[in-house]
Length: 454
Ligand SMILES: Cc1ncc(COP(=O)(O)O)c(C=O)c1O
Image 1 (cartoon, rainbow, N blue to C red):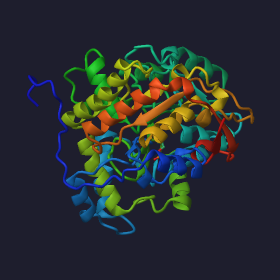
Image 2: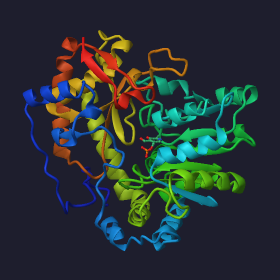
Image 3: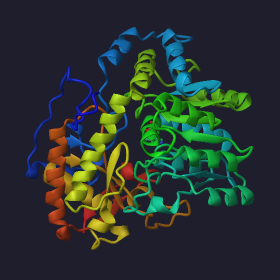
Image 4: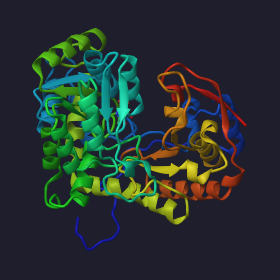
């Protein structure tokens, strides 16, 4: 795009639309009651602007829809598989690509092979499914973010970085079968990891394999290009390849940056480990050339991977998230700064100081935004992370409400509406009360727990 224009436009026009049903405040109060104040229990058609997640919720391009038509559904060795594998390897040149139905299936397979009691798996910050899959094997999931990553108002450009000194200590003292780095750091505010940090982590790992949880690799690469000296002129695909070259493998949810509605993969170089993982894949997902996906999904993802690293798209993507974050910041609403790639995170602990962590300020804020304006966000705080492996309940390091932006789905006026509703809710923040959890499943409790207002 010519650089003299300040307005960054959506680099696409709309080709097919999906109606949004309007709801009233009274209808939304009824929905909340039915849902046990858990927005995961609210039906999608009862949501006006759905910012629950950026996972699988993006709009596909016309070329991706064309890819669905090209999909080859041969059980073994379909043409879609070869196109998918080539597109993956073009950016992530690992020896083995193991297709799965989504990211957590790749995690489950990998940690079944490498986890187990007495082991520790460090990460800058584990996402919920990653943590749950590590802990399910009896291993410890250890978060090692840099200290700035835990301070919502700190303006560090790479708050997703891993604390390398802490990693060295853990590697020296514990049984560590694998180290993970999550790009970008979803639980920590969608914050990027610098190439410099990734290099230092690589060096600290020595012979211990380093894997990337690379769901938002393109957004991370764009931040490297914008913020890390020396990368201004490097094409995004080359930045991605450089990140991949520092690692021994990766897990991927293709529902994020690869612009799929479903899908994922595990990729790695180690032949013996790959063999072990493929055997597990056949047990739970499918044959190694489709894993958990239909041929058409693999074609849509192959095309999505090419679009994900397009710089006009990334400029629009990151700027539109920033637009929401900056407007909330200007309105005096505490948000994690700098604004992350795929989401804006409101600091519910700062906005609702009257609500103690064990009365779930992030969840209370999520409920208020839905009640007032039909906006659905997601708590990333004590509801998500408060139940520890030893059974105790502890406050999470941060109490955030994440407003995740589906890719290519909402327009600026939807976002302006979100800004208006957030401003209204923040002005009435003092009156918001906490919640009590009245039903809790044994794992990943945030998905199905039920609450009552206090
Ligand atoms: C950083 C990260 N890792 C892993 C996953 C799991 O991916 P999936 O939802 O496809 O299982 C997610 C999903 O939100 C994520 O954000």
